[in-house]
Length: 268
Image (cartoon, rainbow, N blue to C red; front, side, top):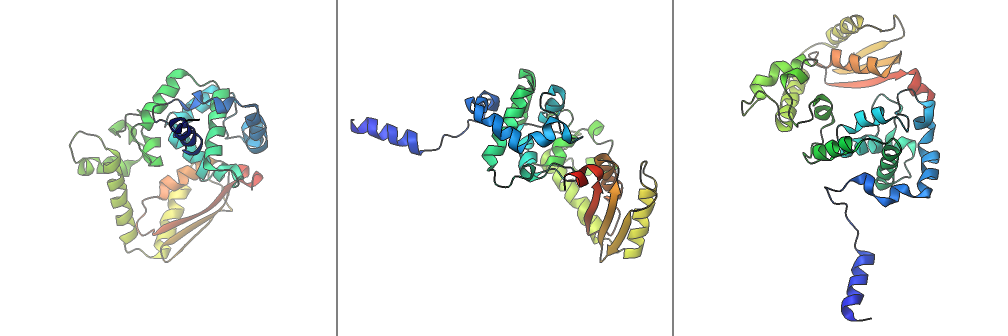
């Protein structure tokens, strides 16, 4: 074997092959490996084949397309790091799996769920924006890397701050502008001089206005500005509603969320 050929073989065998940013992850031949079926059954099927109410079922194209709308990277991040207030633990509870193994399992479920070429293309296009902020991605319904007024209607604090933080005066928030606005709101909330009792009272008042809140069993406590809410409630959506309702109450330094749903308890 001549020197040039030896060098080529050495590089091919030892240098990692990096995934090209524009390549379709679902075109990777590895996700069609028969071994992946066994890995899915061992690590993912307990939830994604029917046992967890909020988990997208493998084969449900609509459910997976919705989750892929924020890009492959965001879906990978959710699978690797877990999703707060749900039964989706980091790596599905299988810490022994590498990040790359998790990614390929996600790709396998997407492939088996037959998400459309259009959905894949849109997800890849969104990934090209390189947005990592989960909240921004979830709010960005139009998937154009900008938050417009119609997308901020459910978050009045953000809507009210749009004009001040819209630095280029285009009527929209870029990821940088949005993060600056959120940081300002958090700083203002944390720096407010409010007693623990008043914070607790304001939180209880906000919770009393939420539909679906249990009449008893929810414990609210504030100590040195650290708010703790504990108890069992009916749904993941209610946890989200609780967080949104108390998020900007003045004086809260941080939020220790100890709320659980029956689904979360079943997978604890």
